[in-house]
Amino acid sequence: MKRKQDHQASKAAKRMASHADEHSKYEEQMMMVWKTRNILREECDKETLRLIKSQNGETPTSEQTNLNDCAERIVFGAFKPCPNCNKSSKYFKETSNGFVCTGGIANIPCEYVTEKRERCACKISEELKAKSPFLNSYSYTPLDRIQLNKDESCFIPEKLKHRCIHRESIVKQKPLGNIRVATIGKLEENMSNIRKKIENLGGIFHEQISKYVDLCVGRLDKLNKKLKEEIDNLGLPTVSEECLSAITGDNFDETITKYGVSNCTAEKVAKIKNTRKGFYSTNIISPSGLAITDPHSGNS
Image: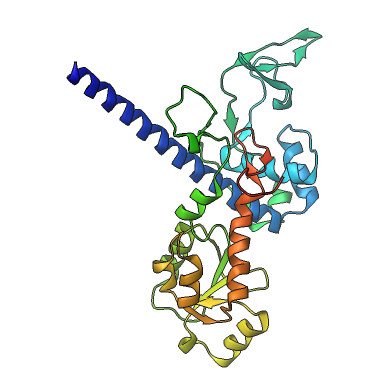
């Protein structure tokens, strides 16, 4: 009897670990979507996003929804048209039986049903690619989107049973939380390693400083007078590269302050931290591709 109970407990533990791992992968996917969304917001105007949706058989809607949809389609792929009637993906409707095509041929309803909507490369015209370095470098890699559902029979712990990302768990895994980070001057490590560290920590790497950058990595003793004036004129908080090895989700303020070499006042550090948190707390993409509010953010 005890052996049977131990076996059941072992199976339950394995299922729990499997679901926790799935949740972690889900969060990673959402990080990819938000990183893409952030870049699109910087590089693409409203008309470009509207055209991307149109070129992929979808009806453009509001500016915010177009931005969210384009980011989701670029990461996971655009929806293929119905294989039965060849109608656009916009005709699919989600039901308890799966996705049903509401299109038709010669006034005859299609009613094609599928459990999973097929994806393909997002269509982006050469004209649109010419407007954005990011779109110009786009290449499609098939990626199955992970879905998490509220399910009483699910073995995911209660705190993980949400169709959205928890801000707290995101910044613990990726403490830079999609803030924009640039380097300046000569560093001890090569640029490739620095960039990898920044991106592994959740930051968005920028090749040069500007007013759009949140944080800078550099060595004060390696900067000439012109570069020092540049970061001071921008009021850009700058830290040494050691900060990238020391920072975690629990010591953000302390680490930025400790390794700060310029403009790292308490006010500026707090501003960066709020930017980092806000990126995930006020707008979260749900599995359906829509932006929803993080219930833990205090926003509605």
